[in-house]
Image 1 (tube, one colour):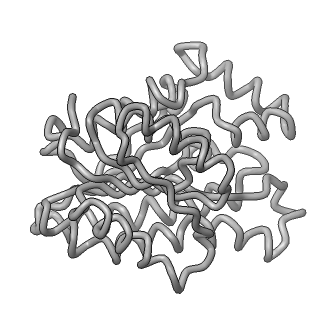
Image 2 (cartoon, rainbow, N blue to C red; image 1 turned 90 degrees about the vertical axis):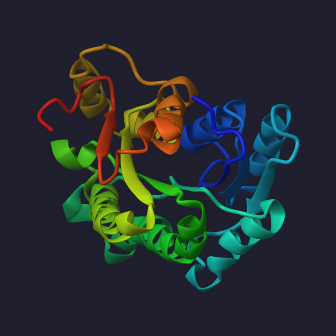
Length: 250
């Protein structure tokens, strides 16, 4: 599947799952604007992407600065002349038992994940309507399994999943598709969870029928390329579990 001529914004792409998505996108022919607050890592990722697409661009940005998020969409359109795909993958969180989760800790994933996703979707809408583009938002299987320490993170991701389905209903008439990817991959976030809650991590690995953790690029990135491509032109409002089968009940 190819994304030649397509322009994508990918948030949180300095490392981890979103970096894998960005690599898959440029190898499929897309132009990308990657967004992250970690400037050194972002510049390094930009250089990797430019080996495949010389125009790939990194924009350093703190997504918790909600009042300025429209600039991300403006930058992409100014740089590439259009916008076809919005991938919202960024989200920070503290992994804590609910009884130890402060109000501030509960706000972190909403401030860095839910609100940026909503605001960027709203800003991107008129441009995606012109190109009959698509949105890919990232959820989590942790919400379906109610995993310990994942309360704040999963709550924000489920809020994202809900607005994604609403947008799929509202924007379908404009030719805009909106889908959700719930990954399980060897990202920095999963590695941090493995260190914080090793028993829960091992239990989860043993639930994966394929008995391996997904690769950020070749598994999660490839699935996201598919959902962004013309091959998925009749798919919207869908939650794709790219998790090796661990969330079988869903």
